Length: 285
Figure 1 (cartoon, rainbow, N blue to C red):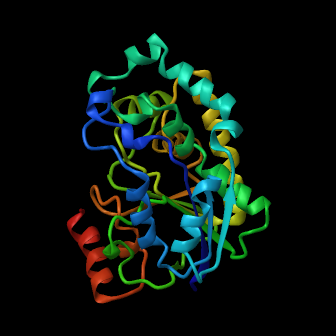
Figure 2: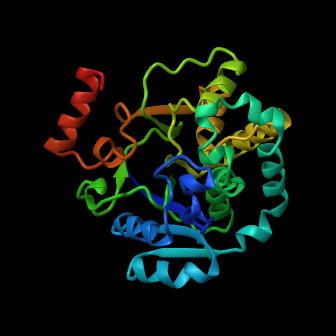
Figure 3: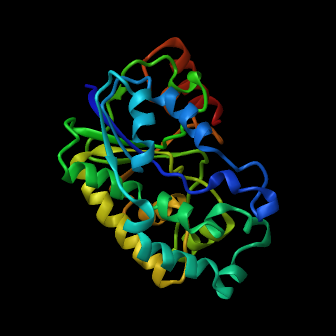
C-alpha cells in the first residue's frame, strides 16, 4: 500500500556562484541561485505537499514557482542562527592536522573549503525534524529531497504525485555503489577522507517517527566527528549512521553512479521503470 509523502527541502545562497577553480575549488562545481531555481521548478511540479526552508528574500520567488500547490515556506537567517557551529566547522577546515589527513586530490571539494556547505548538508535531518515539531507535515511519511535534485524535467519520470510503499519500519537511504562494508569506525573515516561515495545525501525517506529517531542518531554522529576534529558532508555522516545502526536503515540501490534515478527506481510502475529495475537486478548496474 502506498502512502502520501510530504517533501521537505531547503535553499540558502551560500555563495556557490564563486566556487571557481580560480578560488581554489574543483572545476565545474559553481552554481548560481538562478540555476537552483530552474532545477527546483522541475521538482516543484510534483503535487506532493512541500515544506521549504529558505531566506526571507527568496520566499516570494519560491512561492511563485509553487503557486497553487500545498506549500509551507519557513524563513530564517541562516548566518545568524547557525553562527556558532559554522565557526567550529571553519576552524576545523583551517586546521593543519585536518588538511594533512585530506588527500591532495580531494582538497578542492567544498566539504574541505566551505563551512557553509558542510553546515547546510548537515542540517537536512534538522530541517525535517523542525517541520515535524512545527506540525506542518500532515502525511505519515516525509522525504528530504535536495532543492536542486531534478536537473531536468525527465528526472521526475512523468510522475504527478509521488508515492511508494516504503517499509515503515526503516529509515530509507539511497546508494549508487555496491559492496558497502564498514567493519570498523576507522573504515568510516577512511571513506570520509577519500570521498568514496556510497550513500547519497540528496534523498532520505521515512515515517515521522523514524525521522525523529534518525535525527538523534545523526546528531550523535555529528558530535563524534567534531570531537575527532573532522568535518564532512552528509554522505560521510550517513555512512557513520549506517555503521552504528544498520538495523534502522534500509539501503536502496539506484544503480551505479545513478545519483538522480530516484523516481525511476521508486516511481510509478510502468514498463520503463520495470525495465530499469530489472537492469539493476540482472546486470548488477
